[in-house]
Image (cartoon, rainbow, N blue to C red; front, side, top):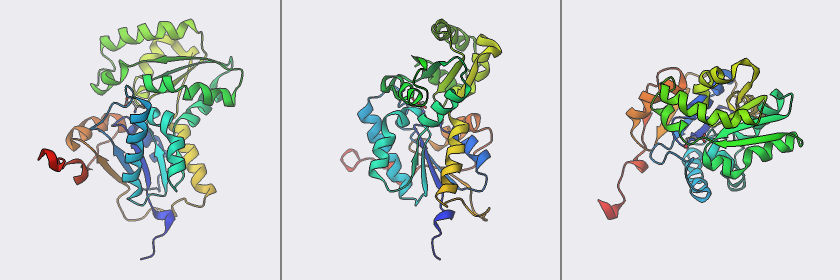
Length: 279
Ligand code: DGL
């Protein structure tokens, strides 16, 4: 049967489960598309690793998805997007979308005072990717960036509503408040899950935005522009999940991020076999 490029899947990768918050939005905006999600659960977190390592992991993850014949690659991980998207665009022959520009766009669209705060992992903050992308869109923006390394582990432990989360957030938010932003950009896949906790600290005067819905709009726009949108819903699996570590653990926590149960998760052989030298 001839392969129709429009019917191919969209590949999405993240360092682990966090990218499921992005996939959730993609599914809302692109209900007729098929998705292959890869979570690099064996090597998470990326947020505390060096640029070189995250770029290398991102290339490997992309090759895994490209071998599945995807038509579009979405880098759902903020850390990977902040350091690797340009390299992936250079290396591969599929359109690549990262979350940085869509996140910057969401923040710039929301701000009135041009005072924007960005929360993200250490590696994302060090890369300066968000301030650079925001300044490109809004050159006189006043940007305050804050690395929040304690949030990812707590969220993965489903401790979003725990008092420990509240005190850590209070600590981080004192620094954010000092900058007097009118917009806070959640620059990490996990943070949308604690949006309400952040909202409790700031009240409704602050715009809280993230990349997920703007990434989905960008993907939809790009697919239409390139005549790559799927024609309609086919009788086939819409979602496939692959991980580099324990599938059961991913399933269990994945539901919390995705909002609905995940039926099947595969760990490819590549991530199961020991290197010959160790076996
Ligand atoms: N997915 C990562 C991000 O959005 C957070 C988890 C990690 O550090 O790998 O930056």
